[in-house]
Length: 441
Figure 1 (cartoon, rainbow, N blue to C red):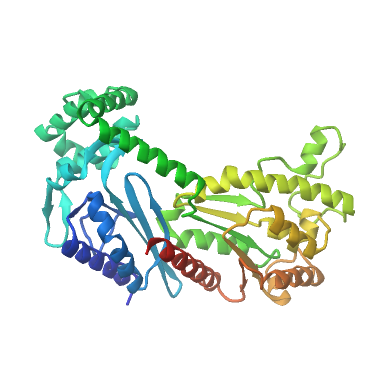
Figure 2 (spheres, helix red, strand yellow):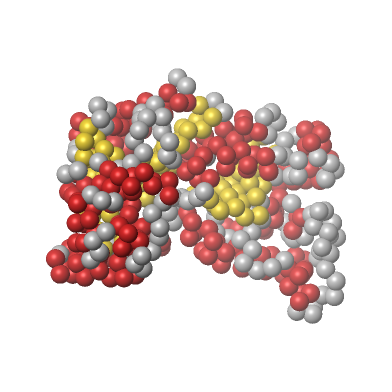
C-alpha cells in the first residue's frame, strides 16, 4: 500500500468512525478528502461530551491501523492528535484537531451547538456551511487582534453579507458588519465579547476562564506532549544531512513548529568572548571553522568550562526547550551535552567520561532522545578529514560507552541518510506512541 493510500485509508476510516458514532463537522479544507488533503491538519467541531465518549475508541482505531500517536494536546478548547508512520524511507504525518468551541482565553465566541446546526453532508463527511466556516476563524482572529487570512478570501466574500454572520457579529462584538469589525481594534471587540458573556452566561463564562487558566498552567508546567532530539557524533558522520532530512520528513506539521539549536541553548555567550569582555582574557581565537583548534586544558579550566556551560544548559532548558515541548512542538540540537562527553577536544573539557556522565545525570536536563550518529573510521575519512583516525576512534569509543545507557540510540550511518533517518524515526515514533497510549487509554 502506497504512502498516499495509507493516509487516505486513515482519513477514510476515522471519518467512517465519526459518522457512525457521533455528531461532528469538518470545519474547513474538506474538498478532496480522503484522497487529497491540502492542509497539514483536519479541524473538526464536536461537542465536549461527545469528544469524551469517542476519545479512547478513536485512539484504539488509530493504533489498530498501524499509525503512531507521536504527540497530543489537551486544552480548554481542543484536543489534538498528531499521527505518523514510516513506509520505507517516506514519512507520513496527519494532525487531527477536535474543537469543542471557538473561544479566546476561555471566553466563548461560538459554541459547538451553533456550529452543528449549520452543517451538511457531502456523501463522505459532514462539514460546516460557509457562514460557520467564516465565523469560526473570523471571530477568533478579530478577538486576538489578527487579520482574517487572505487565503480564505473566497469564504469571506461568500459569507460577509449573510444575515447569520451579521447577527453573530452584532451579538458578540456589538458591530453589525464585517467591514466595521475590520476597522475596530481587537481589544475593543474582545471587551464586547466579555460583556456579552458576563450578561448572558456568567457562570459558564467564569468556568470557561477557569478551565483556560487550569489547562494553560498545567500544560506549561506539567505537559511534555512535544519532544526533543539531540544528535551527537564525529565530524563526517553525516549529522547535518541527517538532521535536515529528519526535519524534512516530519513535514509541515513540524517544519514550522520546531526549534533548532547548536550545542547548547546559548543563553550566554561563548566563554572566550565573555572572558575577553570581562578583561580576564586579552585575545580570543575566533577561527570557528576549526572546532578542534584549542589546546588541551587542565582540570581547573575544564571544571570552569563545565560549570559555565552547565548553567546555560539548566536555565536554557526551561527557557527554550520546555517552552516548546510542553505542547506539540519539536526541539532539535545539533550536539548537546552528550558532545562534551564524546568530543573533549571540541569543548576543551578534558574530564573522564564516567565523571561527565555522572554530572549529566545529576545536573543536566535530559532530552527525550539522544542520537549517537557515527560510522566506521574509513567511512568518515572518505567523507571529511577534519579528524584523524585516532580522533575518530576516541569519539567512537565514548559513543560505545554511552550507547547502552537509557535514553541513547546508536545509529550507524554507513549507507544512505534516509536509512539512518528511518531508523531514528521508527525508534522515536514507537517510543512516543507507547508513552502516549498509556496516557490516553
